[in-house]
Length: 352
Image (cartoon, rainbow, N blue to C red; front, side, top):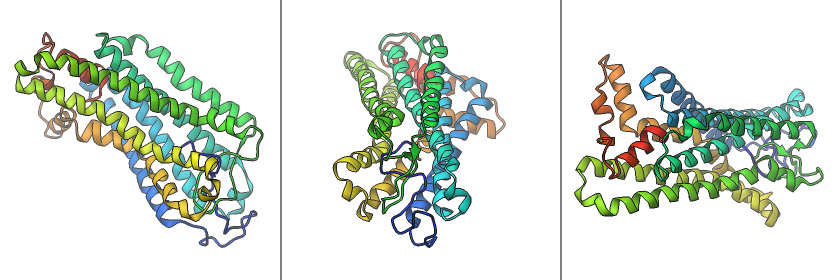
């Protein structure tokens, strides 16, 4: 999780002393600790669940689900990093954890890397969706997969290595609220480092996600205007489901991530409020929002996606899956009314 200049690895509080000798329970925010730990655990479960399903069922290994696996693994890693932040809070008086910055740097580096990588895969999924549907190029994801790996693995790693090697990671002891480790606000050019290690990429992802998914929705809407009245009921349902998925992705991403961005802005424009206990509710929402992405993907792309549910239930009942039933929502491949377009969306890019 990448947070603002007022945020600490240790979820420290002004009620504790700088040397960590304050009362262990005095500065703890148990609602924050509990909710963040629960949501993070669910996201780890969701990310591993999506990966397990991809590995287990060969017939579900589409390029779109492959991208989703990479995204889910990074969201799970972010959630694990947030759990490490909670552990720091609970044991902040420990001489080993508090006096050594190694724990802080490991947790901060982990969340910097996983967050930027997650942002990258989110944009790539939207870009592949545009090329698959709008540009009628369903092989785009497979064709440029190597480039995607370079962007999404090597770029975040480079940024993380730079952050670790320049000794800019740390925490702010002036807060009266829970938070994570990120950039030490006392280092020179702290604002630059905060944008470089997270916020710039996050804001760009907001914009890119809205633009890319809006392009696809507008394209499908225009295509459906001339043919929707003649389309079969199953095809209408398929198009409606595709539109729902296209709405879900940017809305959920922005709603969950918004609280971290809000806290970041408050840290600069209303620092007194941001550093006081009155803004603790924002920290709680941020702890939930920044940790829940992996679980949200699992619920939507597994629990609420009929094709995947049918495949799993069929396996549980030890019956051979009916291929025609599994892919019935996409309709015949020659149809142009939300079928070819939706099929590209569902089978090539959108994980079903």
